[in-house]
Length: 266
Image (cartoon, rainbow, N blue to C red):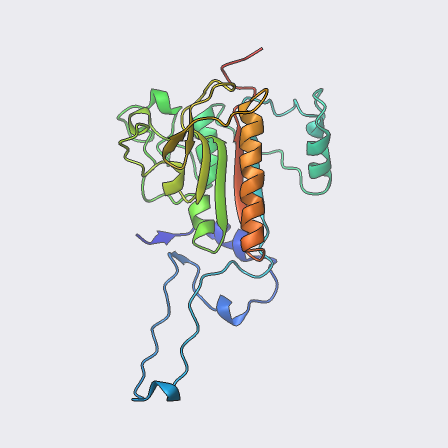
């Protein structure tokens, strides 16, 4: 399947990335990127030939690492980074060193907002007019992301990024979350190389139902276990491994905790 990329995403990937190398003379407007026509040879003796360079899709030069941290049900004005009463020094440091956006069109619901963030599209276009559990058969609210809508993670993956999602998903209809699938709308079929988290809207943060990819796994045995710590360790270890093996390859991390959301553990 070929994906047509929205121009905004194309600009995000290609803008301000310096001069493009020869490898960057490839068409990134249609995904997957089409390989060049193979060279033909007429020589009879292989010793008189040179093998062609291996074709590999790489991210544009100086492409940035991208990290999205999503905290459920935290009000826009709650964090001290936006003038709120909750002390969040790390968020303040991050926002102080970058840009602060204040015009996000929230849908006031979990699944639709997440889908809008992860696709850059209107939530009804993504068939997510409400949360997954209240999906209907009507257009715009079926709970099934159409194949015509490409997730951001898939766009970045096909442009040479490593991609990982950690924590809460809540973007798969309830009838597609069993071990028999279909897995088309699970994270690892939505552009993410790695997924570690829970598929539904909520789970016990001390005894969570966790999946690694599409495989159910048990929480690691550790003192004072909490899922937020677990998913953080998983994300850190994944980035360390990715950077040690391919330090020049940028990464995209979607980090969505279950914190603040139900169940409201005391």
